[in-house]
Structures are given as structure tokens and as C-alpha cells.
Length: 271
Image 1: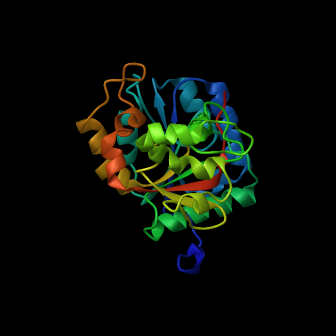
Image 2: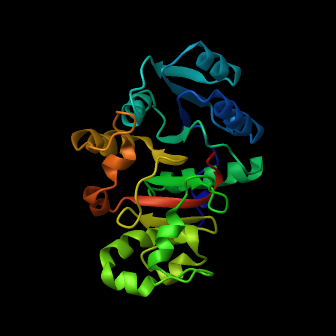
């Protein structure tokens, strides 16, 4: 299998960085310091941050780390913020982060994995690539607990076969979690492709959307996915505003066969 670097030059000039932030300046400063220490702020030329309820302290922190500042005087919610961010993004690829997702890998690993994810997107093999660390995903990560209820996992005694028989469609939707939970996921599930030592590819038929630490094709998200969020909003709001995950993770998403990469990653999620 050819490696993506065989046909795509090594560069990140066409990758934009956006961070969505709301309060919690301690977490933001910790995260930005980790990006700086990992060399990520040097790798990506165009770096921006969007603040909900923007204020003077927000601007001070952002400017200290060399970020271009955008924001709203009110908390407009995740989906409208993404829409505003991507409207100001000419680069074909965008790394989308939140203010509680620090880097936990060395500069070499960060550069290599980000470059590889970008190259698979550039080759048209992926629409998005998750970059949250698989070994160290951090807080609010219950994907494997769900997967292992339906599919056997080392060290876990579950009635997985019985549950698969009772709820086959649920089990099928969860199989995309396998690269996060077991080794050699592609051997168990032919629906999963291994693109490289670090990246698996799964279909949106088997993997729900996550906003967490993801590299996207800008036009795909801006022109195809976000319009669906706004045309079919979820009734379940987040702090009174529309969220992307709750609007997308429904039947339409599972029917699209979007191509999602799962990298070994280099971001975690704070408690």
C-alpha cells in the first residue's frame, strides 16, 4: 500500500487552525502552552480562536500566543460558531479544537501524525480525521464501554453475543469504535480499513460524529454537513444553543457513508 507522502508533498500551508473557547482561561492557557511546546503553533501559519462571550481577558490570552481573534458578545452555541469560523477559512483543511484539548505527544509525533492525516484528506481518502489520542483519550470517553457490551474485548466479561442477537443494528453502528478498543480491528470487522500503522478508516455508517480534536475538509463541513445541522436541528440543545453532534448523530448521518479517519492522535481531553 503506498504511503500518502509518496504523492503529496510535505507541507501544512493549506491547513488552518481554529480553537473554540468559552471562559475557563486556566484550561485555555494550559492547552495553548501545550500547542506551543509541541511546535504546533509554528507548523500552522494561520491560527485563529473564536470566543463565546468575548472579553478583554480572552483577547489578552490569544494575542500572547499569536492567535488571530474572533468572537461573539453572546454564547451563540457550537454550530453557529463553527459556521462563523469556517466562513473565514480559505484553507482546504481545518484543524478544529476546543479549549480543553491539550497536546500530549512530542513535536515529532505531532508533526508526523498531523501531516499524515492532512495527506489522506488531500488524496480524497478521508473527509475528516479524528486526532484525539487513542491510548490516552482523557475525560468523557465511554466509547469502549459501549462497544464492549456488544463485541468481545480482552479482559471484559460481557454477554456481547446475546446483545448482538437482540439488537443487531445497534451492534453494527458500534463496530466503528473497534480501532479505539481492540488491536487489529480490521481483522474482526471487514468494514474497517487500515490506511497505515497510525490511521484506520471507518464509515459514518458505523461511527457517530464527534467535534473533538478533528481535522476536516473545510468545504465538506461548511457546504455539506453544517447546512444539514441547520436544516434539521436537534431538539436537544446545549446551554440553549444548537450543537453539531446531537443534530448529526441520527439516521441521515448513518446513511451518508462519509469517510472518517481514526488516528492514534496526540490530543487528550481535560476533566
